[in-house]
Amino acid sequence: MRRNLLKNKKKMRISFQPVDNPDKVNTHLLSWLLAACSMIGPFATDMYLPSFHQMAQAFGSDLAGVQMTLSSYLAGFAVMTLFYGTISDMFGRKLTMVTGFLCFSASSLGAATSDSLSMLVLWRLCQGIFAGCGMVIGMAVIRDLFGGPKAQMLMAYVSMVFGFGPALAPVIGGIVATHLSWESHFYILTFISAVLAVLCLLFLPETLPKEKRMSPRLGTLLSNYASAARHGAFMTANTALAVAFLGQGVFIAGAADWCVEVMHLSPDEFWKLFLPMVSGTVIGSWISARIAGRLSTQGTIRVGFCVMFAAGVFALCTMSGLLPEGIVWAVLPLMIYTIGIGIVRPGMALIAMDFLPQSRGLAASMQSFVQTIFFALCSALLVPLLFGNGALYDLAIAGFGLLTISLWLIAMNMRLHKSAQKQP
View 1 (cartoon, rainbow, N blue to C red):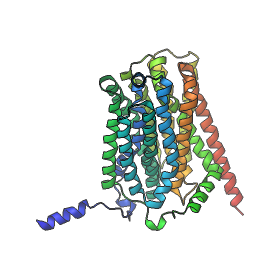
View 2 (cartoon, rainbow, N blue to C red):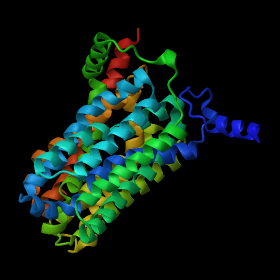
View 3 (cartoon, one colour):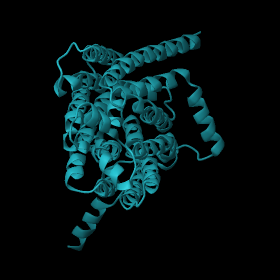
View 4 (tube, helix red, strand yellow):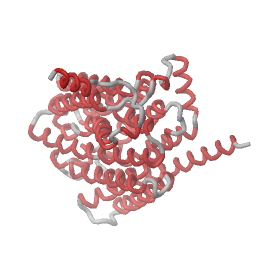
């Protein structure tokens, strides 16, 4: 009996040793775990949106004041995503992930117990600081283990499962806003992040061997960041990926306005916006996974761009009044657009990370930083200009889609030019 107990203890022993063979990794378990870890970001962003009006009443503020809780979260998220990949390059993927979720859980508890709007803004900033670990390190883990079509397929599957997060978050948030208090959102996040910390401790493989870890010297780190920032093609590709998200990002950040003021929906009807939006992401990610290996990565991206262009055309038709009125037709361009994002995002992310093959954690951090800072600026500066005007939301879909395609073509031309210069 004692031998059996010892065997069980050995099986349950938590390991921080790097995985020796990627083929031994359970990719199904890994994709679900990484998707769940990435979901904490949209849960913290979307779940409490239906309670914006309730929070404004509770704190005696207007909607713009409550919007600062979203902007502060995104600011913290953006700044810290710049460092998570590098931290995991130095100390390993697993330790960084577990520590990040434990700190996020503590920050969520602080947000739930806030007695003023300024304190909530501060705790939301702390939430944002620790929320980025799942998304950034998840991408690095996939790229550590796999390359080529298998990496694209796994990235697409993670995106597909991850896509359910923004759909579930506002549904749960609507129920909470209708039947419970606004604080309940943050108690739920406290519990979820604590569970994720335990799951990562038990099941996340360490994918970065100690001999490949980065030296924690400040000079080296600054040099690596400066080198990445000067990489024109890398930064342009990251900007294209960030701009692509803004086509749906304006609807996420402006959900309280678009749903209530433009479409006259109640807080428990926010799902009518988020369900089609997330369904598009899931469908697009599924398509990307299915065609991985059949088309080149660039071929897959071109398919996605065609879908995004079609979404822009539908958006302009909606804006011009050429499509019937109603919630179904109002969300159709957005759903088509998110199908396009689901198709292009895995390939664009992988190609951008491959510009810095020796520092994939740093590359993932820079990638997430650019996306988040663009979303934060969009939320704080652009979205308030759209308030109350549904046509401007549609114009954002067409404009950001066209800008994404243009930036990506520029990035790829820069890469070809640089490759031609290296050839003798």
